[in-house]
Amino acid sequence: MLRLGYKASAEQFGPRELLDFAVAAEDHGFESIFVSDHFQPWRHSDGHSPFAFAWLAATGERTKRVALGTSVVTPTFRYHPAIVAQAFGTLGTLFPERVILGVGTGEHLNEGALGIAWPDSKERFARLREAVKLIRLLWTDQSVTFDGEYYRTRNATIYDRPAQPVPIYVGAGGPQVAKFAGRAGDGLICTSGKGMELYSEQLLPSFADGAREAGSDPSKLDRMIEVKVSYDTDRARAMEDTKIWAALALPAETNSLAQTPCALCAGAQWISAPDQRSNRNPLRGASFRQKVRLVE
Image 1 (cartoon, rainbow, N blue to C red):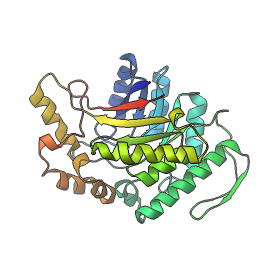
Image 2: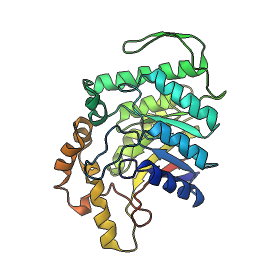
Image 3: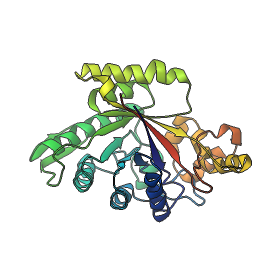
Image 4: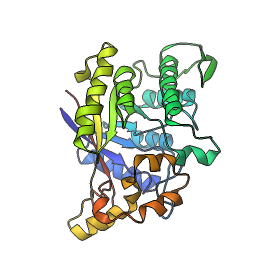
């Protein structure tokens, strides 16, 4: 079954305007609302970066039925995994069976600003695996003492958490993380704009392999993709509106290592409008990312 959701573009709009868009998305039939969690936006000029956890709480109160989630939060650097577990335990209690925790390995743009040393991809992935393990323990056990390679807790308890743990979806751009998503997650998140072979030959098969290794039926797990569009009744306006998202057309490694929004802008200014397929506007002036959710 295909479900369509709205991706709240927190890098382009302030929290109040973005909240109004989310309410409109539910009113117009979208079934989920996912928000990015950035400390800094992709773009310095006119950029925004509202705190995702607070914004989700406000959105939950203003909406009635849509699923709410992050795409994605990094539970490994500026947030300790236990803090993420507490935040989404609270959200899951406030909005039962509506909240989804989407996680990923992160970007230097958001973590380096706090003076955090940015490790290689191998360590970032190892941290993510350990963080997911700890979060799940905190949602199911009492008085968790955890001694990992990167994170530790001593008699930690999340007191406010839903009876049914919040689903965890894992963002993946390659087969290794996709396999982990199938093995340890409840769903997969990926982005559009790559060659079809990446999805059909790498991400989806690896996700299914991971699920089967964990004893799960891959057809029962969600697979989500962000499909980026720019819409306007005026084609020239639709093309012009893509420019604010030019940075997303840069190579993934460039985005991962960029240190400031200005650095991304400098790289993106050479990208022509036809190459900016990562950008979207559902109504005039209202950028969006369409989140497609597949459930079989």
